[in-house]
Image (cartoon, rainbow, N blue to C red; front, side, top):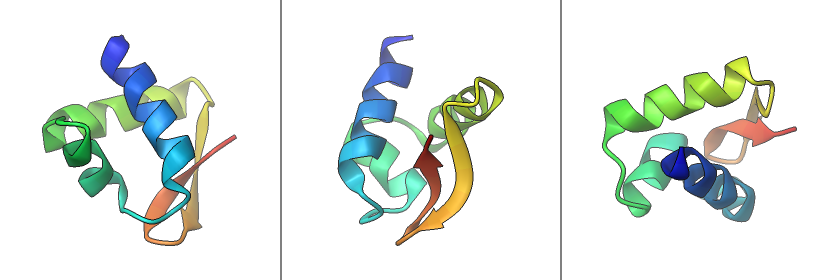
Length: 60
């Protein structure tokens, strides 16, 4: 799950500046893959749904 780790790292560094889909695109992920990664991170309790600037997810 290299992409999941890349996305999580990017989410931490993002600090709410980009929304979750644009952030995925920035690291060259397709929208569908980004949504799958978010779902996995939510199920693993590594992120929570919480508005953080433009982004709707925040790292726990």
